[in-house]
Image (cartoon, rainbow, N blue to C red; front, side, top):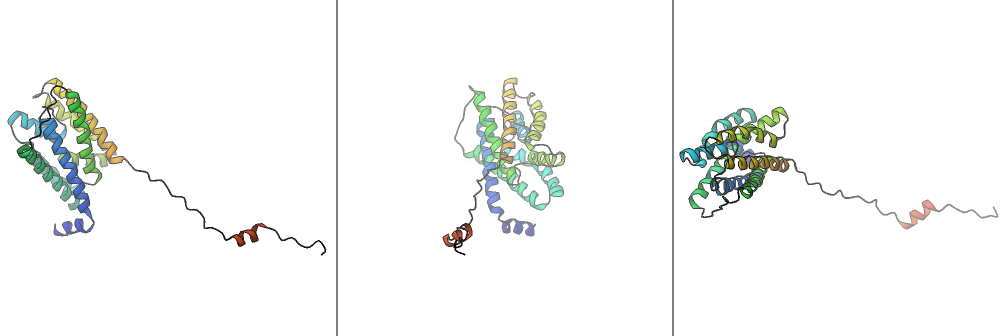
Length: 234
């Protein structure tokens, strides 16, 4: 484990970890301030954690971590220690961010009167947060890891894998949430899947600089282009 940690630091992955923390912070912010405050669900493990919150009052900060641990161990076997360590950092960071928002945040985003805006915000922000983490080689939780493994195994777009896996959890949402909230959650999950695909595949094409040939001295140009004129008397 020490060698793995040293290799991560030596390979310049501190920047990678910093970007992953930004992505997990965006996710935790969205799940607490938009999903939980407006009674929307979510797909994947986050959706199961939110259902546990609605049904039993369990904080998603810790239920998410408990759900993630078995999958992170699976990632250790299939993807190696380095990926496992990055996934563990992402899972712990999400739990800490969410717990911090629960305890200290005074921001209230009440969109009960316009769940369409809540669903659009949720889809864009969760897609962006998860996409950032996945693009930089990490994972925000166990469902991210499973989706990544399935995407690599089957060759499917990772955003589509998220959508398919989320449908199962959204079906369970009907047991605790009204149809209206569930339908807007489906919209948010669909949009998040599209944003994840765009974020992980987007390539910024830089303009190619044209290399001009070196300037040729004037004397050489004349020598090469002007034919020698012989005297007419010869």
